[in-house]
Amino acid sequence: MTRRAAFHAGLASGLILLCWAFAFQSAAGSALQETGSLSSPSYDIKWAVNVPVPMRDGVRLATDLYLPDEEGRFPVVLVRTPYGTETAALSEMGAWYASRGYVFAAQDTRGKYDSEGDWYGRRSERDDTDDTITWLGTQAWSSGSVGMVGSSYGGLVQWMVAPAGNPYLKALIPDVAPVTLGRTPEAYRRLAVYARGNSAPSELSWLVTTDGRVNQNGSAYDWTGLFGHLPLAELPSRMGRDIPIWEKLIGNEVGLWEEYLESAARNQWREPITDWPDHRELYRAVDVPILQRTGWFDGSTDHAFYNRAQVLEHSESELARAQQHLLIGPWPHAYSGSSTIGSLDFGEASVLDLQALRLRWFDRWLKGVDNGVDRDPPLRLFLMGRNEWREAWQWPLPGTEFTKFYLHSGGGANSNRGDGVLSRVAPLDEAPDRYRYDPGDPTPAITGGENAEMAGDGPVDIGFIEGRADVLTYTTAPLEEEVEIMGPVSATLYVASTVPETEFIVRLVDVHPDGAAYPVWYTYANAFGTRGIEPVGRTEEGHRVWKLDFELPPTSQAFLPGHRIRVQITSAAFPLFRHLNTDGDPAWETEWQVAEQTVFHDQERPSHVVLPVRPQ
Image (cartoon, rainbow, N blue to C red; front, side):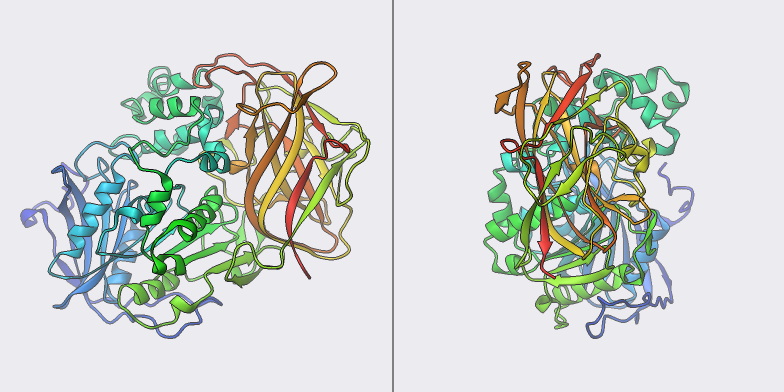
């Protein structure tokens, strides 16, 4: 019996058609809703629950439909999710769209909740999404125009189907989508944190909570304690074997875990678990308008920019190249609708009516309304610090000055009480900085263990991290004038270590006049390891010296007068990831080595960050 069987018992054929009058008004507008009329809530509604939509292999996926209660053909908005469609949020969204002249379809992905088949995350999503779009586009109530919405995994499935060439797919709105298309060295390098076994715990938390037909209760786990266990490969079986409450929650092996660890050990990007062609072929085939939304504090920020750039470079569709829009606010992975994110208030401008923004996009591309969305600047970016929006046609923005800020110290940059300085002046002869990185006492992540899966809830004061001796900090003098940065960030570190392999993390921090230190993005995508990197020299003691070139997440931050710019360097962010300082298979390592880490900043080895400074 399905989760809805009791609720719908006695209703013929398992298909419910209910009608009600509905007048759902949109939320208050915002500075970005400046564009003429939107589809109004002028329809009564009917719905159909658990409609079995057939896939090419015969598996049927449970799909809830919300339809205008009138004869006619209507465009369709689809969301596909492994997290269950029977939620108040999806029900409200379905009614909201249907009252405005759309069919809204919410589908449980394969093997989840009421859908048939076996759940194996990401494995079948391209074909299943393609088949679902075709089914929706050919129904008697369909106009033949289908668009998609969805966040996180619901955005991932959109990018997976984007190259399929489905004739009924007309527009996509992927939110915070953690995915890129295909396998390339560039993708490995830019998104390297996903490709290492030492970051596998952050992946496991998602794999565990989504394993099985019904999602697990993630709050029941002591993630930090769990991720202290070695080897990582044993974690799923240990969770079911050794701890009684976990045994009740987890009844089977985590399907993707073994495959993930194998690809991580080979230092390969985690996503390609299907036989996809070369990434250029995939991006070349993308031919639909796409409106991406993400946040400066989300783990997918870099993915959004990367996907957009690849479509612009490779797509053969003029429409797709012209209509790659990107909206980024001061948000974490989950959009709360509040101006307060973490510990900071970003003002009223940061709160948007996202439903109205999506509706305007669909009105244009699914209904053909000439509302000007295709003539809007494709980039709408929130400038933190000033707490206002910027619009742009190009990325990086024209006139951006990519400016080097160099690390300096007298050899004592350890902690926020040290002598580390950040300056535009290049170093001459300076003593390097050193710290001891012990994987048995790893530097903690900004977020707690229960948030190990994603980037957290927003900016928080990270003074509790900066007080440690295994964290180097380099800070400017208080700024006399505002420094605005908007664009990609990079860093070059010259480092040495006493161990065979290790890892370094770079953070960019806004230090407020009261001393509180807030990161401008999280560590989820800005770690870089020494595995596979050729050394550029050796120390007098014979230890290898590496030049590490980081491509850090893009950001948009105004460092205000009186604030200071800080760069933070460390080697762990536990439990998000923890390198064991060994050169073995990270899936099966059971021991670690303590590393003595060195960061050079002298004339021959000028470690620095490059910030995209905007002219005032």
